[in-house]
Length: 358
Image (tube, rainbow, N blue to C red):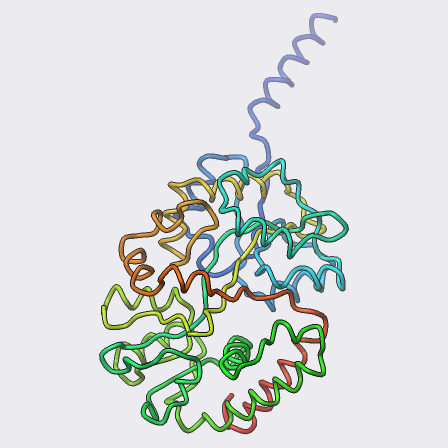
């Protein structure tokens, strides 16, 4: 009897060993180019017990999705660095990060320190940097050689030949162009409203100078490549892609400073796969994987020497766009206090109504 029980136990153990362990799912909430298929497959090959599930989103949608669930439904999110502090204080949708589980030694200290400073609450850090880039201007230097500032999009010499996107970036850029400091005004929302009203008047008056408002990188690229427009407000990554096709199209850091963003890694409060999330973070920061990621995003990683890990065409585009002085003049997006986005949203609606845009 004892022998039969032993054999039965051995058989049960053998059967259990033959059944593969159930794969863990890492649910990413991220930007459209931040989980290229090549990299996902490479990660899953390295960690066969983890399956990656990707949901593409943007800052507003990330907050909305996590707010609706109290931080559930995803294991790793990638909001921009200025969308964490106030959101966390108001909605409590993230959990602190364990920096001992991340190889922060490979990160560019300025970017790491900046994100930590922006996302520290009660001594706990809620994010680390991943990719960064800028918003500014793009111009065909043979057709619009004098474009140097946000306000040049409204210059009559380029009437009908410029474009912009009606989102908060153009509000901030134009505010700087008009001699204001919108980030400093966050501390005085009455002052900030005055700035927004002044910017709205400027942009409404600028309508007739524009060929169209762009809504996505594809329609902007089509207008630039066809010559329908000669200058636009843009993300630097869009300009870099076009530079590879036409060396006359370059990214132009505005004279008041390009607006710089840092997209981060943050853990949703009710995420269920923290260890897998940390593995993904460390994985995508490895040099050979940074190359794959940067080829997909067109932006620079937060790691040291990131420019040298860009594809050759992107590296050439960065060198054609930025001087050391331009880098020193970057204006990093400031933390957004409660109420600011509502103010900006109403301003944008006012501009849309006055210009007949959607």
